[in-house]
Image 1 (tube, rainbow, N blue to C red):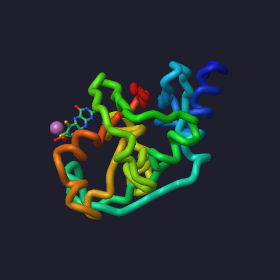
Image 2 (image 1 turned 180 degrees about the vertical axis):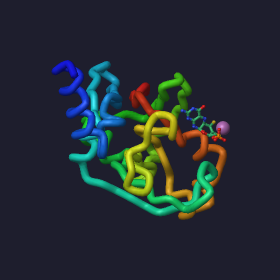
Image 3 (image 1 turned 30 degrees about the horizontal axis):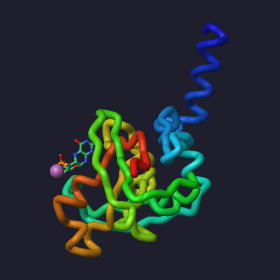
Image 4 (image 1 turned 180 degrees about the horizontal axis):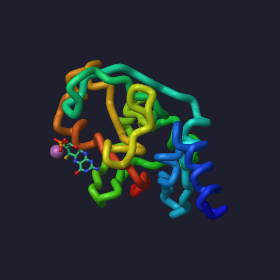
Length: 157
Ligand SMILES: Nc1nc2c(c(=O)[nH]1)N[C@H]1C(S)=C(S)[C@@H](COP(=O)(O)O)O[C@H]1N2
Ligand SMILES: [Mo]
């Protein structure tokens, strides 16, 4: 076996079990001034973690989402404003008034049931609400804001 192939195999074995599947993707956060900060899943892991268990319209069973609350993330990125645009890898985008962001919801989930989510399972970053906690979270508005494959958060106003 070529050394480079062997090295690649060893690195794969070493990293795959946890965050490697998702670690290629970065979440970009852009402020009104156009300044952008990139967060890897490891960067998100270093911030205070929030989690909740809930049913969803996307899963058969209740699941536990964990990650960083959107408010904590925006604070860490030092951005503020009145309207947040959330954009996905497929260019789906939705705007959310920042006044409707709670302390604990939505969260940018990095894991479902403790496991990182590959792109094909709506990861690696998925904006989710505690849907069971209030009927307002089971609304078309909240579903439209449940952006999976999140790639960019930008303050537009
Ligand atoms: N990445 C991404 N997230 C998305 C969407 C999308 O097209 N792409 N659609 C949104 C809208 S408008 C709604 S109502 C729900 C729809 O989820 P469903 O397509 O599984 O019914 O996901 C939201 N999140
Ligand atoms: Mo929707």
